[in-house]
Image 1 (cartoon, rainbow, N blue to C red):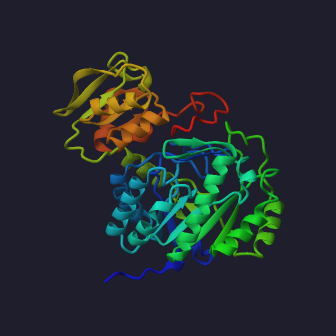
Image 2 (cartoon, rainbow, N blue to C red):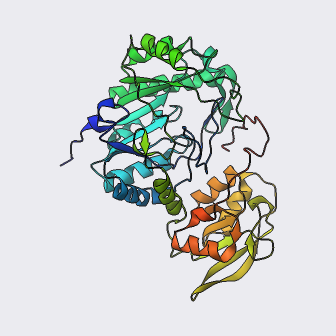
Image 3 (cartoon, rainbow, N blue to C red):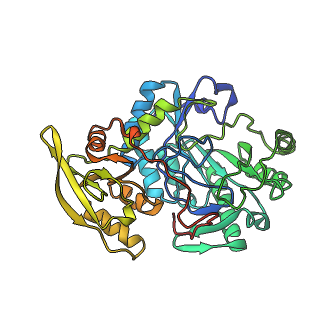
Length: 423
C-alpha cells in the first residue's frame, strides 16, 4: 500500500514549519538550457550563498549515498530536491533517475524540483508516477517583449533561439507546464526574479496570470547582482520595493516571504544551513564514483610525475596510477586526444579513461567536466603532490584539503554570454 505523505512538511511552501522541517538540495543538474542575464553558475563555490552555486556536483548514482550521510547528521530533513546548479530538465533522464532512486530508497521524504519550465512538459506524467509532489517554476515575464531582455538564449534540443523567439518559446512551455502540473494535482510555486528597470513594473501581470492558472504560491525574489553577467551593474532591489511588489502581487495569489535564496547544495532548516560539515560530505561523496571495483585506476595530469600541475586541456599525456600494496604506482602513460573537435574530444578522453575512477587536474572547463562525470570519471581539481591526493581519492576523505580554487570565470572572457552549447 502506497504511503500517504504529509505535504505540509515542505518548509519552502509552508512558512509555519520552516523551523521544524528542513530540506536538502542535491546538486546533480550540471547543464542548463537557457541563459539568464543575471545568472552565473559555479560548480566549486564555497563562499557565495545564492542559487546556481554548489561546492561540488554529484553523479546520479551517488545522490542516495550522499543523502544517507545528510540524514545521519540532520534527521529533520523532510524534503529532497534538485534545484541546480543548472536546470533539472536540461538532462531529464538523469533527473528522473535520481528521483526514482530517492523515492525507492527514502519513501517518506517529499520530493521536489525547481526548473525554468522549458523542458519539463514531456515528463509531467513521469513526475506524478514517481511521486514528486512539489515543483517550482521560475517565470520572470508573461510578455515575451519583457522576457527577451532577461534571457540571452534558449536552447530547445539542438536549436538555439535568441531574442523574441526564445522568450516566446520559453513562456509557452512554462504556461503549458504549469497548467499540466495543476491538472495532475501537483503543488506549484512560481519564482519571479525582480530586476529593477527590467521587469519590476511587470510583476503584477505575472501574478495575475499565475493566479489564473491556479499556482499555489508566488515567490518574488530580489535579483542578486552577479559578477561577469550582463546584469551585474543593476543594483539589487531594496526591501521596500520588494514589499510593495509583494503587496500588489498578493491580490492575486499567496506570497512566499521567507525565501532564503538557497544554494544548489543547501542542507538543513531554512536560514540555518548545516554549512561546512554538509559540504565536506558532499565533496567526499563527489569523489567516490560508482563502480570503483571496475575502475581501479586514477588518471593524473602532471608535467613531471610528482605534482598535479596541468590543466586538462593542456595535458598531452596522462599518467595512470593504481594501488600497490601500501602505496601507489604509475602503471602507464596514455596519450590524450588531439586538440580540436569540440565536445567529441572530451568524449574520446572519457572513453580512454574508462577504467579510471577519477582524473586529477589543476584546472578543467565546465564542458569536459560534465562529459567526464557522466561517463563515470570524476574530475577533481586540486594542487599538490600526487600520492597524498591519491590517498584522498581512494579513501574518499580529505579531498577538500587539496581542492583548487578557480580564478576568474569563463575562459571565453569577461561578460561572456555563452554560446548555447551547454557550458
